[in-house]
Length: 304
Image (cartoon, rainbow, N blue to C red; front, side, top):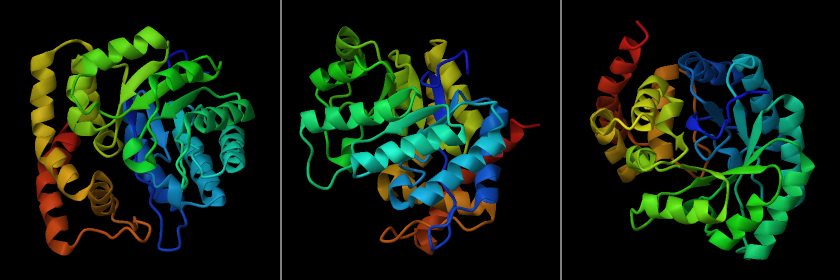
């Protein structure tokens, strides 16, 4: 067990390299995880949205977890996404992750038919009972089309193993206000996704940054996280400024398409987006690589 919570600090979310048949390339996955491990990120977010969890079979998800555990060798907590349409499937995935050596779980309310607040509560309760690992609520209305009420988050926080929530950036930009409201109702660790707003979220007092860019550029993301946690606004905004061109690409093309283009370039290995998602075209891909080159060079320099 780790003495530090996996739900504080920088949680880096890498892509999952797969072939056209959806089979995980475990060697390439380890090559992505090794820099995260060596940089000392607070946790690795395996099989998040960037990790295309929703497109992988149970068997491939288990292979990915086993490979990650073997690669990381207990040095960094691994938080595994276990979202699924059916509650029984999500419970199976939670048990698989626990059996394979994961340290924590991340659960999104994946649905085709829109869920009620009570249905979401019962879903989370069942998964929390299926495994003893600490669990983070994945609040991602952009993909799940489900919005957690603050009352639901309060109910979920009363479940013993539910320890954290991964929030989207607030539409009104008032992170401080949202943090105060949530902390008035729950004792959950509160972290944010939405990389382009992470600097301000951390400076506002968020507990964690659930980071897409951290999955490929961990040292730069970690430096930003440490500066923000220390309250150094100038350094935080300087580092965020270096990343702004990449945030522009994220907003224009979607972070998942940008990340997979970069992963394939950096790995020199196949990293397919699952259909119906399509990779960036040659022109768009070249734009992304040109924007990312100064950042990857900076990352390499930090290893010297």
